[in-house]
Structure formats: C-alpha cells, structure tokens
Length: 355
Image 1 (cartoon, one colour):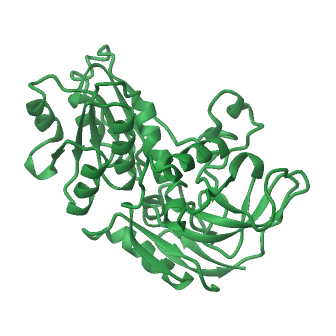
Image 2 (cartoon, helix red, strand yellow):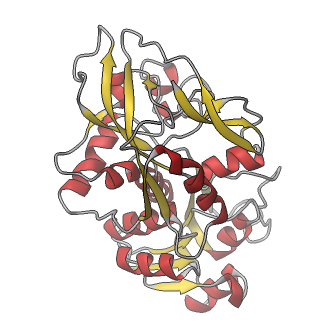
C-alpha cells in the first residue's frame, strides 16, 4: 500500500509498505478523509517525539471499515466510522485505573503517527475495534467527522482538566482549532466570561461564534498584565492552555486566582522545562493547580461527541477552512499547517481518488 510518511526529522514523502494485518479484535480501515494537525508539524520538523523513520503520518480522520477480526462484534466491512486519535488498549491496567490514554506507558494510547503507522495511507490498522471505533452519525459530513478525531475531544478535555464551573471567568490561551473547542466547551459548561488570547482575524471571528467575550493580543503587553487589568486585579478562576510554549505557564499562573485551576492540552513540542513563577504560585502554597493531559479516546467519547454535533448542539463547521480533494493534496495541506496563513484554521483532505 502507499502512504505519506515522515522519512526522518525534517523530511516527508510517499512510501510503499505492506498492508497491515488484522488481529482478532482489530479492524483494517480505508480513510475517507484526513485532517492535518499541528502535532504533525511538531513531530516532523521539531522531532518532538524523537526521530521517526518511514512512519506514515496522520491521526485525524474518518474511515470505512474493510476488514474486522473474528472477535469484533459491533462493526463490519462497509461501516463508516469515526476514528479517535487516541486508541487505548482497554484491557490494560492503566485503563482500569482511569487513564486509558496512557495504556502501556505514558502517552502510549496515542499510537497513530507516534509509534505506529497513521491514517495517511490506503489502509490503516485499529486496535480493539469495538472499544475504539464509533459509527459515524447518519448525514454527518466528512469534514465534521475529522474534527471529532482530535480537535473536539482535546479542546473539551482542557475544559475538563480546568474543572470549569457555572459562572467561572475563564482564560483560553491560544485559539487555534483546539483552543476554539476549549472556548466552545467552556461556554457549554456555563462560564460567565471567556477571555481568549489570539489575534488572527479568522480565529477571533470563530472564537466569538463559540462564546468568547473578550480578546487579548500578545502585541499589547503580557497576558497576565492584561488579564489583571480586565479583572480589577483579581485574575481568572480557570485557565485553559491550548497554545504557546513552555514559557506560557508563567502567564497562566500569574493570571490565576488562588484556588484556581489550569488545564493544559497544548503539545509542548520543544524546550526542556516548564516555567512556574515561584511567588505567583504562592511560594508553592497558592492552591493553584496545574493539570496537563492527553485527551481520552475510545468509542464512548466519540459517540457522545458525535451526538453533540449531529444533534446541532455543537457546530464544528467553522474549523475546516481549507478543504482539498485528492491524495495528492496531503503534502500541500501539511505545509499549510506548518506555515499557518492568517485565513487558516484547519485543512482537511477528502480522499475521493486513488493514491
């Protein structure tokens, strides 16, 4: 089969590989559409998860099942399915402990384009099909289905990690596609005031649609100075970090009230240490909690998020700003995500031809 791969750090290209083998609990799928993620950029050009050779890229998409193992009960060839970016091993001890995304080791629930070939190929393998795939809701667009792989569950997980409560004032740092879904989730959770950090007009427009009330620009001073000025020196109840780098935590901590919570879902692609300001962290005793997590995967979460979209409670169509048709556009879409032009939020490639 043909696939688009990371050849080594800083280099991508098309390669030929053997079609994956289907185990008794697994499925082989054919991608119908894929989306490009900033994580792909971190992986290829920053070597964020280490060097990878001839690893097929892609962890966001939707698909058609072409083969299932003998023990798979709920899926059959021809089914159209949602495919989560995180596909845990559900019989692992980590899953039993409530951290399925780390089944087999830290971040090991993230298999596609991490240590296993991803979706950007003619066929891809899904472990534990009954636990990880979800039936695509009738009438859902392929573009919307792609957003359910990663952008929606990751953005919503930031909301969960920050433990947003009714009436909270929330700061969302970064309004790329994940940050936009954090804004949407915070709004759904009952935040009374959402302050978003970002300047690209297309993202600001979308953030307003999803419930952001006010905006902060990096060009107008530090995040924390602006937050404190906007809140009469009090700070915010919750912070979601969906963009920036290791230094961003300094602003997050300084912007937070004592007893507040920070939820990080930003992939820190470079840097050795996260910067936590000692004094503003209450010299270690300010009850300012910091939680960073990989989004949960699995069928149940996909079904619930799919229901939000199919019922009209969540409109994810604002995310897919660049839609291509044909395998030959995958390199172009990846480069677009690397360059991030002002009008971009998310590129999607509909795979309606042969690679």
